[in-house]
Picture 1: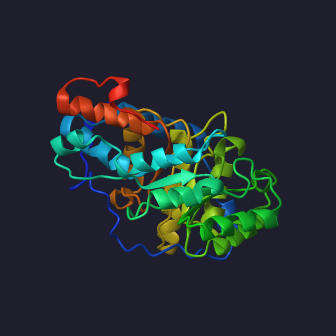
Picture 2: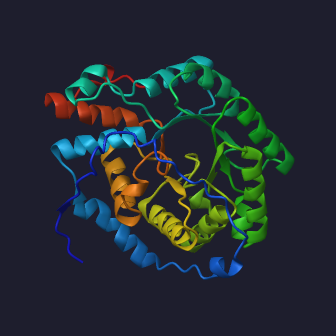
Length: 335
């Protein structure tokens, strides 16, 4: 395989948030244990392929600016700290409405831009919904005993229902990892199916907590089972694990998404989360999606970043593109 750097150019209008597409929601399907059992992962090949993404793909100048603007539109701006307050959440929502300084956007030829969603704990859903009123930015709530996922099952369902009632349009649930580690795929399927039903019209993102699943094969099998159960997105991590989103894990998950689409015709979204803080890293993930799933997935209907600190570095890089100088930290305030 060649190691020559290649230029990856974005699709036309790459910075514009593609939210107008009518996407048929994944309804799920009966659990197919034969399909799940056929999942096999060549770890060395996966790691070798993942290593080529930052080594072979690069974007510069105006192309880089376009890709970074697209990354912003796919960002789930997140605050999931124990010291969260209503004031912090309102500030986060203000940043979600105006993620980049107006003068930078104007220099790039844009009047406005906003993120894909704001992600908070259930307690702050109503605060976020109020702060985002009129923006059409959805509120996502983490649920089902996030991050451990060890709450009683009925309590998990009640938590989902409460967040939906409070105005959350997306629910990020955590699966019970012990179902994967013991190979109890029926239990995992039934659990996620029940979560999907509890969500109603709200979209369901299933967090696999991949670092806790032991093997890449488990990641691949769990991805398939969650999609069969009706997940709208599969998500790598809680952001609270020792190791969160990595390109090898992402490659396994997006290939499961591609396999599911080829077999069923339904598109499922992908969300890497945790540890993605550098603008350069966001470009690597966008390249992964473009090469493995294609341009159809390069929008916030089907791809999201789960991050809190990523936006600061993206705004810093955009400021450098416009002015030729890196801004001081106080010039790009973040929540």
